[in-house]
Length: 99
Image (tube, rainbow, N blue to C red; front, side):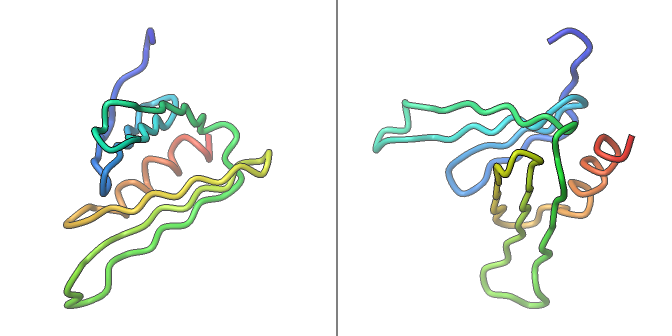
């Protein structure tokens, strides 16, 4: 899209999530082979609230989570494995939601 740029992109357990300066794009990989994909566009402008969960200290399986609630009642949840700066994701969302 014109004027849109990618800020961050992450692979979750199987899916992908892309943060741009205009929206969040969720790529849901489906099926056994993973060839079927569902793409969702989640605009920052309709986010009601969001929550981030950081990883605990010395956890065996460190993961972080992002939960988003939209004004229309839709919810989105993303679980990130490994060393992901979830606070940076929170700052990106805040920058566009609080405009």
